[in-house]
Every structure is written in structure tokens, then in C-alpha cells.
Image 1: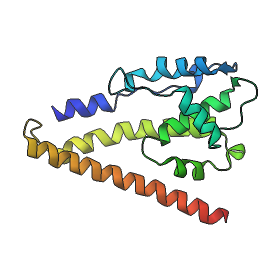
Image 2 (image 1 turned 90 degrees about the horizontal axis):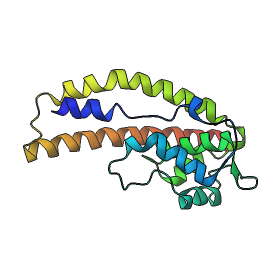
Image 3 (image 1 turned 90 degrees about the vertical axis):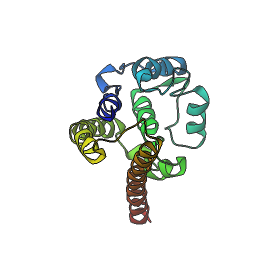
Image 4 (image 1 turned 60 degrees about the vertical axis):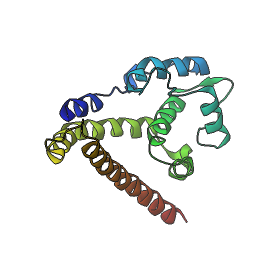
Length: 174
């Protein structure tokens, strides 16, 4: 059963760069693009992937390059995709530190590289997780708790690695 769950989780969908229009989009079109291409990644159908409020807050916090008029460029959409991914595990202040010099960052390149690395992880990680969990009985509350504790610890390690990279970058830029 755990192997099936792992396979389902790692079969998430990505918004590919070639699926992003080369035309500038209005906010509602950006939200539709996210919702139509990433909705399979929601935990429940009522979850929101991206909202107008989120995008406006990203702009106010200077996480997003300034928008000219009311249209979002391809670079904005790539930047939003990066923010969307990063906010899954990092604080907005860490994301801001990481992307502080956003005018120097090619977000399309970064997002494409991310997709390549993620694809490699999809090949490597699931079998290792299944092997590490062994024959765990997910119907046993103690086994399920132990497994979730272990998965949370792995998530913490990954977040700490990101924080260390961000801190290193901040030290280099001082």
C-alpha cells in the first residue's frame, strides 16, 4: 500500500515551459494557467494553488518583478512557478533572500533546471523510500506515526539544506 502511495505522490504534474504562452497574460489568465495545469497536485479540490491576493502580496514584498500595466510576462510566470515551488517548504523571507536579485536571475533557466533535477529524483527517491519503509502497515496507528515522523525528519533535512544554501548566498553577497 505504501508503495502505491509513493508512486501516486511522485507522479505529480508540472507546468512545463513549453505550455506557457509567449504572450503576456492578465492575472485571471495566470491563475487559470496554474489551476488547469497543476490542479492534480492539490490535496483537495478546494485548495487554492495561487490566488490574486498571493500574487499581489508577492509583488508588495518584491518577490516578483514589477508588473507593467496589468499583464504578466513569461518571466513573471516563471518567477511565480519558482515561488510556488519554494513556498512549499520555505518561509517567504527565505524565498525573498534567495531571489533578492531577481533582475539578474533567468527564472526560465532555473525552472527548467529544477524540472530536470526533479525528474532525476522521481527515478531515485521512490524505490529508496519503499525500501526504507519496509513492510510497514499503514493501518497500524503506531506504524503510520513512525513513518510520518521519519518523512517529516527528511523534510526537515531538506529545508535545512535550503536554509544553509540561502545563508551561504547571503554571506557571499555581503
